[in-house]
Image (cartoon, rainbow, N blue to C red; front, side, top):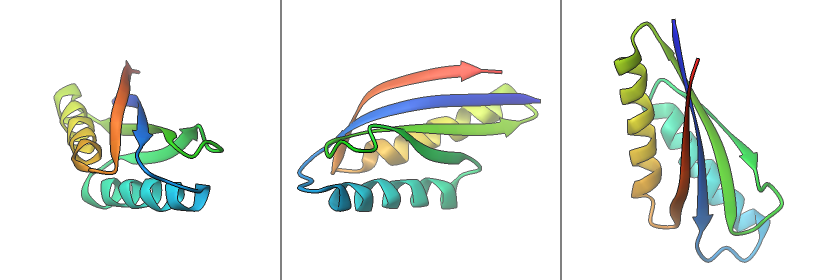
Length: 93
């Protein structure tokens, strides 16, 4: 069993409140969960308007399979025009 985990930090453009930030982060997390076999949770900067940090985890029998799922999740986050990814940290268990 292979467990892949990534931490993704991002800057969110133009939110004027935590409510606006949450709408962006929730929509991204929902899209990632629905399309790929991963779990995603916001783990950092929860009280800051223009930053976020997600933990994304995938489990599989082969490392390449898990890595592809996590790469696809990153591509969904990258494709969102309302934010910019600033840091990605990978970890394998």
